[in-house]
Length: 209
Image (cartoon, rainbow, N blue to C red):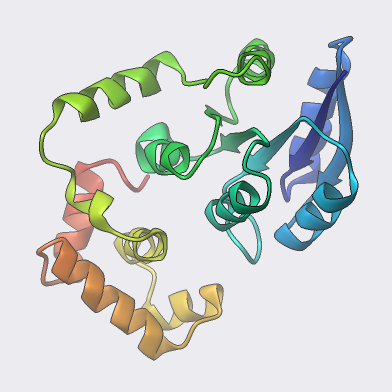
């Protein structure tokens, strides 16, 4: 049996995933979690072959959970399941150690296909993500946003979405001064000067919806 743990904060999504996997005779959901704390508690105490992980979780983000998982369980495969378009997070998650990236609106057959590919030791990417990867390999200069740390990238997207510094600080449990420092750093790295320039860049590169 392929033993799977699902980490997603939406009960409906978890139920839907379980229903899909129940139809496969060799797949079994052995644990569920809706946040980072629950996820690590279950993973530490439950034998599993793979983790299906959402990016947007309360508290620690999927990116942070993925990095911690790969630090503690280097060989444990992690399939990222996200509502975000591949252009926004896929490359970053794959570079952080994910074994695959799949959008939540993908067909059930694609989810099963991804799981089997990853369990067999491979990496799973959709045809559209494969094109993005090829395009990046053919591009000599990295996109400006690829120079950002994960936290800087997160804050850049929030700024580009029109969220105020104070609100960003509250949502990320940081001080306004710390968020402002991150903003200064990401502006320098991206050679930008204003929020308007960040918004324009994010829209042009499809980093926000």
